[in-house]
Length: 219
Image 1 (cartoon, one colour):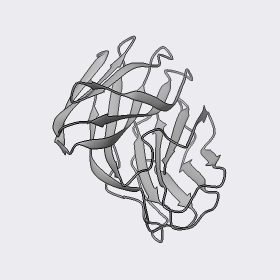
Image 2 (cartoon, rainbow, N blue to C red):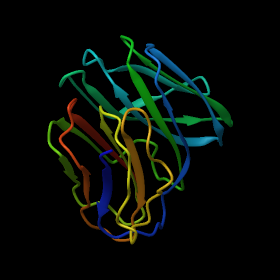
Image 3 (cartoon, rainbow, N blue to C red):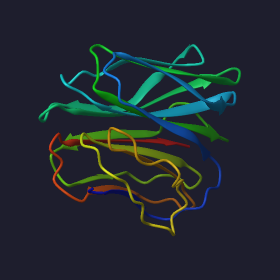
């Protein structure tokens, strides 16, 4: 098995906006809509990370969280061999829920999802988003200067069935989300200084179906 690493190269320890990892799912069913029953998501701002193995370069058409329509923050889809999608969507929900639904225009081969909540934010709209993809073993996104007390969410997809490892133990990102049929890896980082941040993910062998990565930041 190959591995994948996702690491934040920067300072950590949250201050204002803070993220909490809820849980993650991976489903190997070729359908166009994936309905997930999650651990309880409390009312407030919710960020959803999505990884899919995609046969036709199909972007995500909609995401709902407890019936509330979510907004696309960052997304990249591509076709290399089959293809991959990495995306982050978000919504502010008025009451707790256990329901998440992700829909595509066409059936996907597999789908993985991660759920995060973000508290103490100044705006529900991300202050920075970016998404990249290709066939490189390493994908990198470097942010502009991000204010102290912000929360960074990132997700990386590789189309093959990779095992997952983590590094960067000095960073305060959540390390419970990992694995999944799509080769999904997600992470969050609550910043403690005002600075740029380089988010870097490395697959330990060349991905047959390419890779995608998305990043969103809340302050």
